[in-house]
Image (cartoon, rainbow, N blue to C red):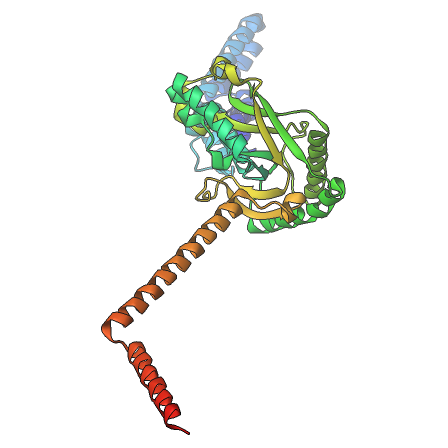
Length: 407
């Protein structure tokens, strides 16, 4: 409102000044000047004496009146400034320089437009940054894993990786370690310890439903053939059969349980189980060098049979926390089920059992050797054991002599 008044003020002041001048100018114009009065008296006396001069005198009076009016207007012009000052004194922004304000306002509008342009560009950039930050905050950082522990599968995948690296050494950075091989069942973003705890509870609740789906049956997952996602990820396929269909049902059931707990589990795309063994995203530097993975690098293994994995365990794993020494992900929780739980130990358990058996055998052999060595040393050094044997022998001899002397 105030800027509008400042822009309108000069026009208002000019109008007020003109109105005031008009009010002052008319009365003074109507008052005859001194010369006019004298001229008028002379004219009246002359009119009495000489009526024939009336027309000429009237013309002269009009001329004099016009001249006096012009002089009056010239004398009254300075009053216009006084009138403007008086009007300005009544305004609330009396101490403000109107011309300066108008210039400042125009400059301010120009600066505002420029600022809006700059702000618009900055807002777009900030919006992009906020979107990136938001996306980053909601990127998956946890997943439910089906670990691959069959040595035949891991060994075959290692052979494929070696063959690819021989053809393109750069792709060594894209390979997944054998200890990290797994099938991803679900992905999620857990932003707090509370959410992690909820996810652990959801995984635990899933065990009952998985057991009901399995009904004691053994699930063999057959891995055969190699495929890719947009030439960015290389993976081993799961052969389509009843067991793979059951695995998909388990994934859908687990997804429903997690969502009921308030844990969102990734996109709504259909679950496609696969075993990733190579991906360009493992190395930012590699992605600059290699845009796509050439499928001809693994052409010889496209239909290769890698082996079967018995379904026996699901893990809730972290993508960001430090991995275990064997290369597998950090586990928050696990559920175990199926035949392998009761009858078939893991490979790690077999190795541990073998080590214990070897250690026990070595300990027994060492103890036996030490005992034999101690016994030999006692016999040669006149040990207490030898003295006792000699005493026992002499006692037996004396007993025999006494028996001979008796009747």
